[in-house]
Image (cartoon, rainbow, N blue to C red; front, side):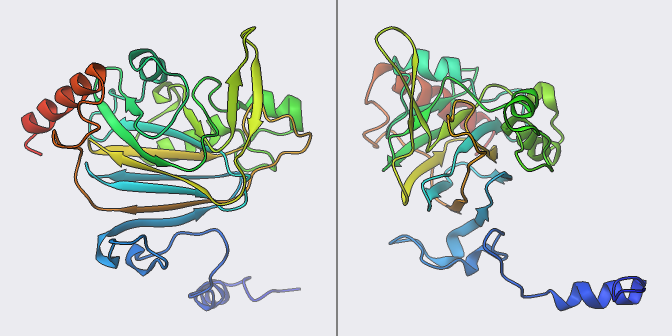
Length: 277
């Protein structure tokens, strides 16, 4: 029996009939059409608006000074996050330096996401969650295979590292370009004995905003956290909204909040100046 898509013409007509279809998880194109913008943000400033499904990924090149708001609408998102310097991808997020240089392993507003060269790739501006993890990274294919029976990116329980790889490939990056990541919206704490304690999420509606300080490639992998104790692969949608702005300047209280932050911002500003940004 033939179907409406069994011929080229039928497939074309079927595809064109889908135009205008809106589903729960998809990008808004153009992004200026996104609704419910934050106060003070106008449609023309918006550069990225997308809902990433659980088990999905997102990626985008963003200019320095872009504000990125991540929202966990159901309380089950887990936003694995990586940053690379756009055009110079050998400079990338270094989670070890991020926590070591700032003497703090727990993400909160004011934390800088540092590169391996001591520069600021992004700043955490606001955070209503407080449930994050900068220690355990993203799940691997082999772990999800063992835990859920499948870790492939197109399977029913995709691993975070495999989703990162799909996004990275869109920017000419490969597996060796993927450093350890930070996870937002699913938290882990370390107890007095040095053991991880799973905290899960802060509940539905939590959000976090980042400000990019250099041109970056932002990779997001919305996959179950590797320490999530729930027996079933559980991850909800992740909302992304980004709009144009300016990098942090010396008159911002964040700039000199600590000696380490001041040096990192100065390193970053010098590079931007050298690049003519």
